[in-house]
Length: 376
Image 1 (cartoon, one colour):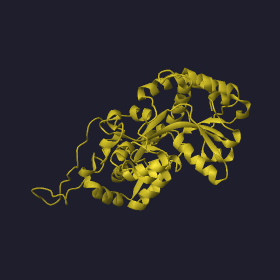
Image 2 (image 1 turned 135 degrees about the vertical axis):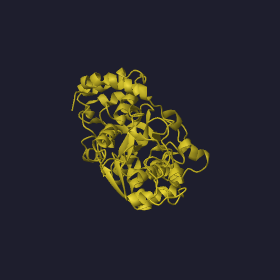
Image 3 (image 1 turned 135 degrees about the horizontal axis):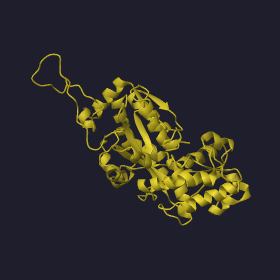
Image 4 (image 1 turned 90 degrees about the vertical axis):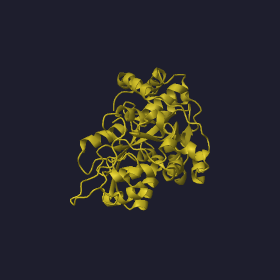
């Protein structure tokens, strides 16, 4: 599964290119816009201007967006259908760090990612480094956490969810974490990713840790529990995917709840039962960002408008993720019926660690995690 899968100030507006024919002033019709520099849609001729420029570019490059993750399959299909451009999908199972690495490696080529979908720790790590292009969408001020995470809008929080433990109904019913230490779970428990680079994995440890009485400032209890699972032979260092779940290789998966909700539906369609057990309410916010060297800058910004707007909010909600626009949509009566049917009308989000707490936890886990569970 996706491992996540969480320059200060504004850039100048449109650059006016000198015309070959002398003129006293350039009109809006004759002015050439540099879409890599605009920080909001109005600087690019509004949404209509963005759309026209994106259609001319003809392509958008995305990375690390599994189609089953937060309903990204529908999101990608909807964008292609609406705007008629090709979408290149790279490394769908990649981590947040791998997204940035790919952009750096491919910088200056037409293959470099245009946009990112990253965990908070990676987002904060690369703030003010020139990696992201500041961009505020039409609804940016209504995105929950946007102002506190990054007022310059280099990154914008897009959706969140609650961690959970998904598992095959053939294993019975899990009612406590201690159940996972039973012999019937031998070789069956997987965590989505490596906590040193994966937001999902890190939040899985935070969830276990909290359930055991730990805090975001001290993950020793959670780490110790994973060591117990490993010593019992129950934890396996395998990254779960749709394939490993379908084959039965990873019948117990610690992952984002909105991913597991999709597994429940897929299993039901196959005549099987997939259950969920949530020992503590811990969540994480993912974030959208435009690459500072996006090869398709207009499409990158149009993607931000589409995904972070009302259409995107409905798509994410239908996938079980809670859009950061959701509270505003509920307050204004604009939340879609499909979204409410999927995630309800709650305005309360699960607790989440700060970027600083995540960084500190990873510093501890750099040596503690391999010691607890071994290496792959």
